[in-house]
Length: 358
Image 1 (spheres, rainbow, N blue to C red):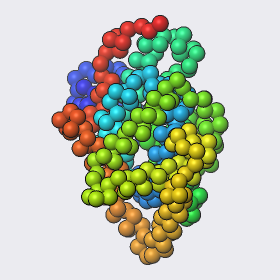
Image 2: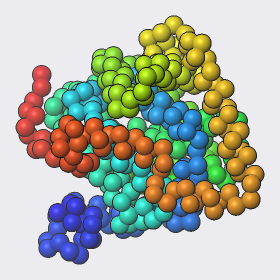
Image 3: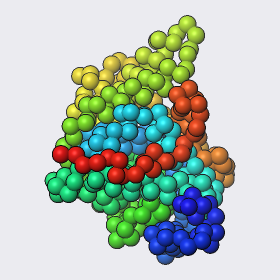
Image 4: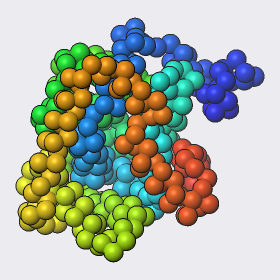
């Protein structure tokens, strides 16, 4: 019924429940502060972020997932990241891949529908965590996957990676920052974040980002296990590619460069915590030069006439960075479960099956 309403509208369903009516009414009425033109331009900007900026985004949000107390606690308690990292990662790549594609955030576009599917998964996880932990657990730990945490994802996924790019030397117009924020704020609207908690301007997004990281809780009891899972996933992806004769050397260099990236963007404390090494290697110390080179090339591209037409064309099939990740996870998932693809249905089992803990 949910998928039917998502694909074909509420009018195709006989006697839909009130909850579904309310959901579809919300989806069918876009907010007044968002326009199709600004969302679409924001999508072009999002796709144009350098690979270094997008890698920094992954770093930042993996950091939130693995090292923060509230998000890490919820993810660790659910256990899916530990048990089913490949299909979970494929669904993540599926979500990101289509976001910037033309028309993908239209009411019946694939990115729009994926965002609503993730919204349902969040709601299901929220119910299951409350059922599993009980109200005492909620009183101690707060509402899991709360609107406050989700609203923080808007700038964390959005303007933060442009700010990383700017820090690396990339040049953007102020309008780029504003439209990227509207792009991600609209995604936040689709995912059910309360309107009062959605940043309408770049300035509001930065304030929200700053506040969110200032009050982030210490790592949860699951932080080490989740960090290990992230490292296993990286190694699994690396193992999918074989370089004749120099495979070990190439992969070692990539690992060292990634570790150098972590130190460069996360500082010494986070670099040590995430990599387990005291400092970047000689190869790792090349990461800043590679990153700033990407920014300079992007600036050169923007100065050449016809930039916006080229930028728009590059997103024709979605985000090229995430397309690589999506292909890799698709192959891994096919080896694991026969290739069922991303379903976003992992939490569909009844919450009653969890019982009461404690």
